[in-house]
Image: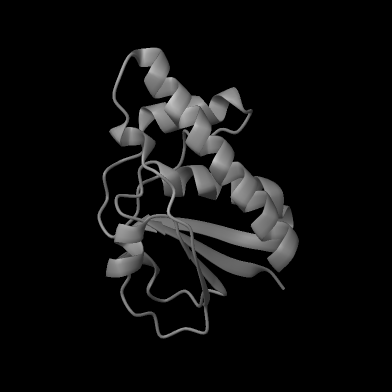
Length: 138
């Protein structure tokens, strides 16, 4: 039976979108992956470009609000930033909660190349986390 996994972030624009992409990639048919935010900010174009560099297309992802998923019984909820963890609403669910505070590459400053490098760094951290999560939990 497939597991339901929710990745939760503040705006569902960057970190949670990257994690959704990698969890889908690593979990395959073992899980249904959802991502949401406490708010919705749209999918960050640099997150799309950074994932494309690694062969994963998230260009069709949408930015969703956590309220859209109230009726889904999640097995796992992964918060990828402290803000979402602190503001995560109560889910009447048996979901096992995981948390990792990834830095927000959307807040990176500097040259275009420096910003791209920050996105790549965070992408790699999330990729490693997702691969380990799937191996250990699914």
